[in-house]
Length: 296
Image 1 (cartoon, rainbow, N blue to C red):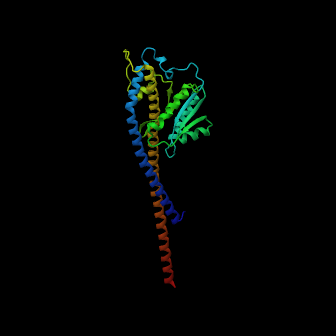
Image 2: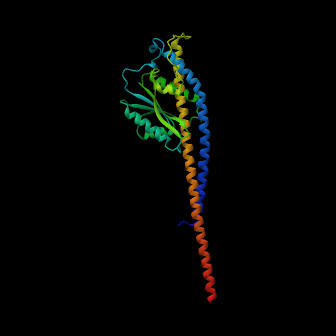
Image 3: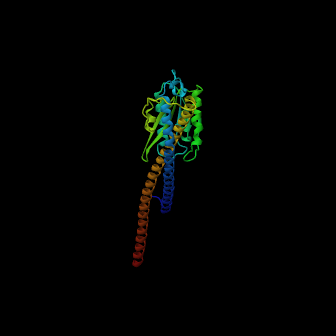
């Protein structure tokens, strides 16, 4: 059995751990709220961009307006943007999104290259000898649009240059504080007539039979809207992943705090029992000694 001093040190250590996990839980809760607020702030712009994009794409001859709308006849490779976290202590958050991305890659018939957001995802992919061509990390919490807009333009540039034939994004969709779902969605080429994932994220405008006139011209407006929309969509994927990461960390730290409190109570009970037993033994020794003296 451990000595009383060792048990006191262990109790103190467990209580210190509980204080740290409680602080991390509080910080994570605050960061979840910040990410959700940023996500809600970006949604109106994304909805408007999506509606304009739908109107443009449904005009006669829309397939010639922009190459980002056209499927390539031969797909020989793909690019996957993986959104993970920079830090651990978030339960299975990072492992779940990496596992989902790897399962998706196995389901495809072409090789994939990766661009990662977050050190954890990058490290897991490199350990599995995946082709990581770029990585981004240490964004602010929550990240700003200016921080990630260049990433959206880079994905478009890689597709337009012919380096990749498809671009997908793997992220964790935030549904609630207790439910986050890893998903993989197609980003480029953007198929506006069948993109059910976008319809679920943004208000869907029914097809119109009217033909609109756009200024200065459809092609120029299409270029600006589609580039902005894809950048906003990447931004949304990062924000919902950030919210999911901190929600997972908050839940993990909450469970860790409860476990530490339970362990502290158990150790305190054992310490009190051991201390009481020691006091009882000392009293018996004193009583026995006193009785022995009486017989002398």
